[in-house]
Image (cartoon, rainbow, N blue to C red; front, side, top):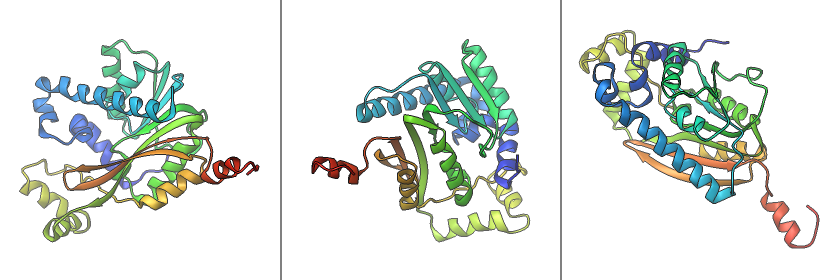
Length: 265
């Protein structure tokens, strides 16, 4: 597996603050977790219930044989998936995250989950899944590599299966915030100084926030045979994102028009 700088940062997050790394709220840091774990996992249940309900509304009943969660972290979303699908695969690049996920699954008696350490490069997974999912993960991966991962995720979606992907489109940062972000990433010692100023561990890794082009993502979906989609635009603080649900198969617009005219496409 090729090592990227973002992988290194995520592995460090997994070792230091695995829950805060998933949901960046100080109440999910290690010293405050005890009273907030229930809220952490309840948020995952609400999210998955909502995504699957929307998918069924848009595309009809879903097959529930298999599901894949890319960037599964500590199993916040894998747990509700495992309660709904016969078999679930969780993929993450951080071994520490996966150890925590394994413990969380065991506490709930869930044995239908395979956890895989991977950056999901082609060849690591060779089956297809009825539901393929990734949420608040791709935004932390550089766009070129992220688009390759999206192509992998689409490839892993079964015929008539559904993919759910979230990507960030833009950030509404002030010029000083943009300058500080650049300095943390590019200047020697910039991240160290930024952590000290924010009262955080000196070695806390920087989290990249990358912006994807919606047209490029939509074109990639269409080229892979995903012709039906539901698009939710969301605002998350200073971030504008899109959450996509798409079904593999169905009719393309041209095919539907040709059929309506009594012709074969």
